[in-house]
Each structure stands twice: as structure tokens, then as C-alpha cells.
Length: 575
Image (cartoon, rainbow, N blue to C red; front, side, top):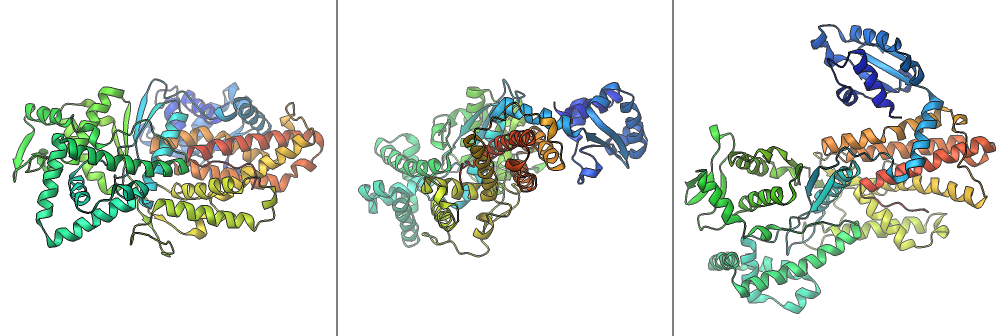
């Protein structure tokens, strides 16, 4: 049973569903900060203006109405009005029995819904630039976007993961010019990013002494846009070599994409965009460039064509949005791109509106903060560029050392695999721990803390639970028919109550585009399980109670694994 929904329905019924629907009431439900204040709370403050009554009076009237209903007594232990809140207290045994049974019945499908059935959501994320290093900043969009996609898929949406590769633009004119002077094909195939970056940096150094190189680069990009065979072949070589490097990192992160349609994919679709803008008389000239202006200067003009007639990334993003709507008929088109690009996306969405596309309102920019390094202990191969692969490998090696020095290392069969899952998981967890708009403070002490709020801590809680279940299996214990009503202690109740909140947590994460909701939830769940583990002596309990507690342990492990998957963290069976 969904107790949060039951409480919401009780509120809506008491109000005859006129002032608030059950769905609206459910969105307002909160969890009291202290269990003594109830298990679910409905704040009445939002109804004060509507009813022209004080929130405490509304809460008291709702309490009386709900208690008159015969259904309330069968679901809730009691309902109290305290201040402006209506607090619902759940029956321990009934909740534990209901929640744990449902988890074990549904398995890894627990918490999933079909609310997104028939709706397609596109998530654009990662999108590194060809011929440039995959740096630590790229992990924010990659981890965040992948998690958002997993969350929406969990809620039944048809999701499409798009990697909008940065494979077009004037920088390719510079790269082609540089390659023709200093390029080495064999060296590039062996070490694509470093070699391409080296000649790209050399181009900029030489261009300061020989400005005519910039003109040559512009000419090469114009040839690229016009489809020159030789120039196009060189460009394809750079793209293929870079993707080979990027895919190695994606494999390490266990991330895949449905589409790699980058900026170049839209090169033949941009003329149509320009024509549409001309037909609607939206283009104006400004210093030789073609721009779209906005009413009352609410936004700066959006450049569509530069003065030399070449496109800019705004043109490509407009073409991409129109193509995606035609191809996928999306319900939402989500761009997971850094907050500094907020103005750009406001302009893109505003231009789409001016073009008459009502679906522009379904395009969403999901921004995020920066990665900061207070201790600067990370080694870098490119000045201040912190390479993602270096960070991931360093995390894996540090994890390996911690495991080697632990008393349980002898129980681990594949040290490399376990260290990879924990090391990579630790980084992903730390990047999704806080609200996405906040900057990420990168410190190894916090990331690889096996005892605090960290990925390894949560993974250890899972491994701990799995260890108990293995011991039970080795002892021939069959707990599948356990009597869950025996497990009515405070620890069992709090753990089951937390598991019960999983679905609403995932829904909140989707609504806010905030995977941190899931990260915080799974941390709380790990802490609650550890408290249950330390307090309840699972295997030493008398047989009937032991079996009930084993069922709870299995349910907790199932939920932890599911939640970790939503933030991209793979579990380990032993630590």
C-alpha cells in the first residue's frame, strides 16, 4: 500500500476534493523531522487563503473529518492536528508487512511506475568536444544526465540518451590548418587527444606571430561546410580518433548513448532554419551578421549567421531542436549543460517560440555548478586541465590500497573489478550528492571516506546485507514464509518506512531534475540499515524473528541496489 497516497486521499476526501485533489495533496505531504511528530505530515498553510482560516483551525477540522471515516482507523494508528500540520501515525506491523512483502514480490521493479507510459523524454548530456581532453568538468554533465535519464526510465518514460558531440565549428578550421603543417597520422591514432591538442595549441602560439593563419583556418572551415572532400576526410579522421578515446571512458563509467548525433549532423539542416527565419521576417542585420531580436530587449540578440555567412552553435541548436521534435515527437527535450549556458538556451527557446513552435515550452535547460579543488593535490598533464580518466584511475588505485589493507581483503575474488566499481562509484556519488546548482568541492578525504556520507559507505551497507543473506543460505535457512508481524521494533519500522518513501523520492528527483534526492535517500537507507544491523542481531535472533529480519535485510539490499543504479553506481557483493 502507498501510505503517502492514502493520507493524501484522506485529506482530499475530507475536503470533498473541491479545494485540493489527492494528487495535489500528495505533492504537499512531508516527513516530520522527528518520528514522535508522526510518520507523514500534511501542511495546511497553502489552504489558509482559500478557506480564510488559520492553518491550525484547518488542521483541526481536517482531523475531525478524517477520524469520522471508517477507513482511517484501518490504515492509521492515529491522526493529530499540531499547529498548522496534520500528522499521520502509521501502524508499525501493518506497514512493515505491507512494504517488505511488496519489495520481495516486485524485486528490482519496486518503486517503478508507469506514469510516463507513452511519453518520450530526450536527455542531451556529456557532449565533449572532438580533439579536446575529456576533463573532470565533463563528468558533471555526464553523471547528472545519465542519472536523470535513468530516473525517468524508472518512472516508465521512453527515454533517448543523446550525446551532442562538439564536432563542428571554426576550431576545426584551425585543427585542419595545424594538421597540414605539423600533424602525424600514426601518432594521432596512437594517442588521439594528446596529439590533436598539441598541434591545436601550437596553432594558437604560431597564430600570434602569424595572424594570417586565422584567415587560413576560416577558409578551411568554410570548405568543410561546403563539403570539400579532402577537408571532410581529415575532419572525419579527427572525429573517429577522438570517439575511440571517449568510448573507453564511457565504458569505465558504464554509460551508453542512443544517439551520437553531434553538431555536424545538423550541418545540412541549418539552411532550412535560416530560410524559415527569413520567411517569418525574424532575421535582421547587425554589423554584417544575421540576428533575431527580442521584444523590449528582454534578451540580447541571438546571432544566427556570422558576418562571413558561416553558422554559429545557436543555428545548430535550433536545427537540432526542430529535428528532434520531428523525429522523436518528444514530451520533453532536456539539455544537461552548465549554468553559464543559461542565456544561450533562453535565446534558443525564445527563437523557437517566435518561430511559432508551441513545443518550445517542452524544452528544458538543466544547469549545474563547477568542480573546485581546494587542496589542488591532483596531478594534471595539461596545465590546469584535470583529466577525467586520470581522476577515475587514481580513485581506483586508492580504493585498491584501502581494500588491500582491510581485514576482509582475503574474501574478495576479483580485487581489480571490486576496486573499479567502488572507485568509480565513489566519484559518481560525490558528484551527485548535493543540489546540481552547487559547486562540487573535490577532496579525496570525503570521496573515499568509507565511514561517512560517501559511495563506499553505501556500497558497504549493501555488501554487509548480502553477507548476512549468504550466511543464511549456507546454513540452509529458508525465510520466504516468515511472519513479518513479529518484526515490529523501532529499527524495523523506521527502515520499512524509509523503503516505502522510495517511489515518492524518485518522483521528486524527476520533477526537480535533481538526482541528489536519490543520493540522499540511499545514504539515509544505508544508515538506517546499519542501525538495524547493529541493533537487531539478525542471525542470533530466535528463528521466527530471525527469518522476518532476513526478509527485511533482503528488501533493504534490493532497494539500495536499485537506488544506486539510478545514480550510476554499481554494487559489489563483498567488501
